[in-house]
Amino acid sequence: MGGVTFVTLHIIGSNDNFGRTPEMDAEHNERISANIVWLRKAFSEAKASNSRGLALLTQANPNFENYWPIEQKNTYLRMIPGTRSPEKAEATGYDEYISALAQEMENYTWPTVFLHGDTHRFRVDQPLFSAKSGRRFENFTRVETFGSPDAHSGPLSERM
Image (cartoon, rainbow, N blue to C red; front, side):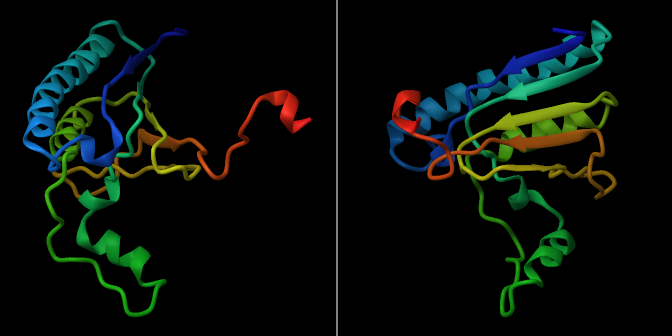
């Protein structure tokens, strides 16, 4: 649409169904494999078609902050007395997504937006860092939508 490639990924909240039951882990492993193939294909097709940008849409917040360099985490945590970032982040169901996304961004120079909901907090930021340079990808922007309790509920007629 308008020279931009739009792609949906089936990434869900609650740690992408990982680490809850053996059945959910099996479902997660099958879905993550398909999602990563789809993600890589999206970048490949966006490059091949000379797309002006890439929009990735999903439900889950993959917790980009979990993958930030320690110095970046501590910059934000300094505002809260007595807090420190853990030396090593715990493994999550999103690890492979963030890794694949960062790998693809190393060779993609067009604007990329990652739109999601899940944690119900409106924000627009640049949360993805390069493993090579340790710097933010300046052409990668996350947009998280509002959610409960900060969204209107009920039919429109009830709100009027």
